[in-house]
Image 1 (tube, rainbow, N blue to C red):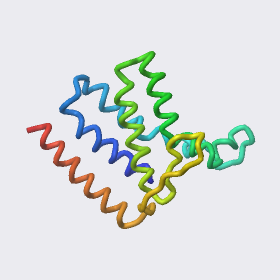
Image 2 (cartoon, helix red, strand yellow):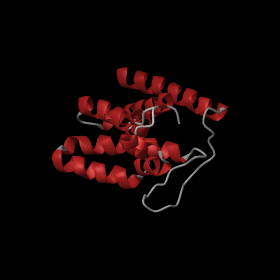
Image 3 (cartoon, helix red, strand yellow):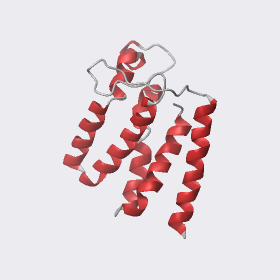
Length: 148
């Protein structure tokens, strides 16, 4: 999925859970940032082919970053050092993984196991645009619900 829809998904998740959260100022940015972390491989992998960064370009690394194994490990690690960030991190990261599992490319949810989970959503399709618009409408509804 594209970065724009992951931001929309992160914002949707934040606004959905925001009324039930005690520390809203921490929850909001952590969920948004965590919802983008699985795609760091695309940002870190340069266009040029540097030998040291070549592992960032292969599919195994993408499978690694898009797994609940990494999500749970990082959430536990964060819980040990900064407990208040652990739940919003887990929510944001796992929301990204869930929505990526709906694409035809899918994810390997429990890396290093090889089983892939994939769905029906084609990247850049009309269906993805409809989901984007529907989530946008829900976001507007949640904003009005929280403000008034």
